[in-house]
Amino acid sequence: MLYFIGLGISEKGLSIEALEILRRVDTVFLELYTSIIPDFKLDWLENMLGRKIRVVDREDLEERGGEDILREAKVADVALLTPGDPFIATTHIVLRIEAERRNIKTRIIHSSSIITAAFSSCGLQVYKMGRIVTITIPEPKVGYRPITPYLVLKENLERGLHTLFLLEIRAESGEFLTIPKALELLEDMDRRVGEESIVDDNTLVVGLARVGTPNEYIAAGSLSELKDIEFGPPPYSLIIPGVLHPIEEEALTTLFDCKLEVIEGWRERVKSVLKNT
Figure 1 (cartoon, rainbow, N blue to C red):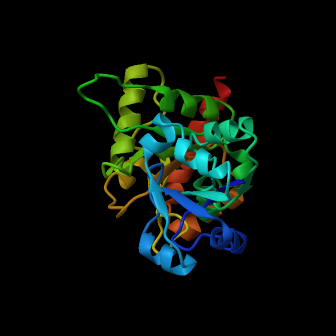
Figure 2: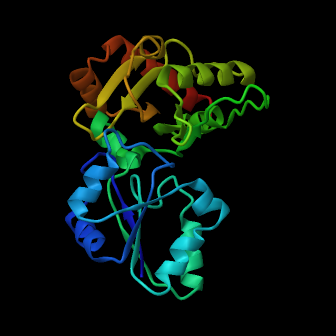
Figure 3: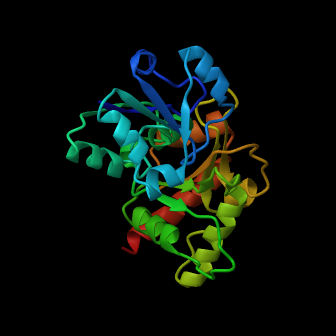
């Protein structure tokens, strides 16, 4: 059996079921390159489980296809621990498919994910979530400047939906995209598309850092306001709302001191986008 187990989004996000499985399987593998879990310590987890954990990297899972994991899972019970929910924003589904092809049984033990936690934390309604998109770290030497995040935002706004932006993390090299930098990139995409502006100083934005941890930080306001905020350590994500329900507006103003005039101005902007579609 090969178990795919989610670590969740905080240091102590493992479920009781996950702990029971991790203590009884023959081998536990752990990957930490797809995301960052704030304050996570490997030795703490090993002490809690009473066993050693084998850390695997991108090369092990993607370039070598998780061959070491599959080989062991063929003859024993094995668990692969991943940040968040096992198959959210990861490529590990390839490993599961290959395991089943080799007649290795698989099972998923789910955990919390930024996909849902981001909306729960800031008071927005998840059923109004549109397509999710990642804003990547710029590669100046390559010269590739994608505009997909902007196009996804425009498409979602035309349907009145909220847009969740995941900000790229390269855990192996310690690189991560900050919220102010991501906002600058969105502004640049807006300018390059050359249509009616969507992303500017007055755009309503929700910035989220370390969601689900004791020191999570969330700010809601205009783009110009959020560009001046120091959000602290990663991981980060962004939400640009679509059509807001009055309760959602109240959540942003009450919980995060978002200025009412920012919300009112954005409300009219979104109406304009909807009217022109």
